[in-house]
Image (cartoon, rainbow, N blue to C red; front, side, top):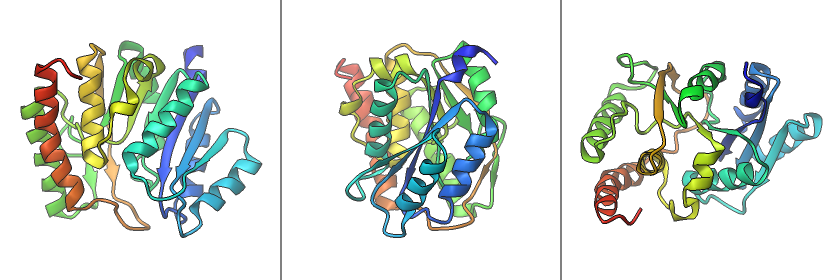
Length: 242
């Protein structure tokens, strides 16, 4: 593997992921010995942050950022991106804490980013690669991606994927504090802003498996935000205000 890949950070936001956090950290660390992990915990009532702290005491490659409350997925990633840029990590991953994203794909994503600036782990690049989702949620996700692709004009099959790898130069070029969306909308907005800056976006296929423990954080508000955001992004781009 290229020596440049030895400086990589995996950002994992958490809120009430006590049943998953230690396992996902272990899986990431065992994937490559060149990866660091940053847990961004929103003061989880179930003690997720304390579990992450205990792991960090044993493992110097694990870092924990505590926030005062449930401030949202988007702002958690923005905090993690600032952390990564300030510490000069060259490659910065985002992934879920619930074991739905398999860290085994990380080496493939690092290989793919040799010819790109942003690599997306895509559930829909080679058909539908989702396990254990109820049909209504799968259809919602699939058609939401189709809708976002049509409105934004971005030729990406999985615009709402939360499994990504950025080059640091992408995060340095973007106005991260101007990104205010959450959930699905956050993922769409980050990819849209990357494309607007002229960065190369690439997808690789992954298999997504629904969580075994804990509850999903998705709700109707997240869906409505994404529906409206794509039009906002399109208008702002036409006005050269992104």
